[in-house]
Image (tube, rainbow, N blue to C red; front, top):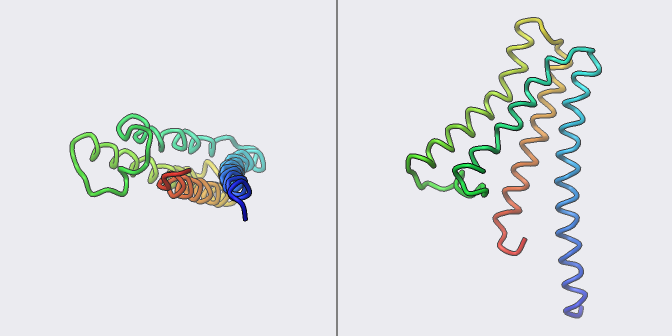
Length: 136
C-alpha cells in the first residue's frame, strides 16, 4: 500500500468516526423528541435541558477538552468542573424518574428517555476516546 493510499484510508476512517458520532447524537435527539411526541406530552423535553448542561463544565473549566475528567489532578476549578459534570449527568437520569413518580409522564416515555440518555452518554464516551488520540 502506498503512502497516498494509506493517507486516504486514514482520512476516510476519521470521516466515518465523525459520521458515526453524528448519527449517534442524532439518534439520541430523535428518541428525545419521540418520547414527547408518541405520548403527546412534552414534559420529557425538560431532560434535554440537562443535555445542554452536561458539556458546559468542559467548555468553561476544562478548556474545551474532556481530558481533565479522567485525570487525578485537582484544584478548585477542576474539582468544580468534575462535580458539575457529574451533577448534570445524574440530573439527566433523575428528571425522567421524578416526572414519572409525579405521574406527569408515562412509563414508556421514561424508558425512551433512558435509552436516549444512554446513547448520548455513549456518544460522549466515543468522542472522549477519539479526542485522546493525538492525530484525530
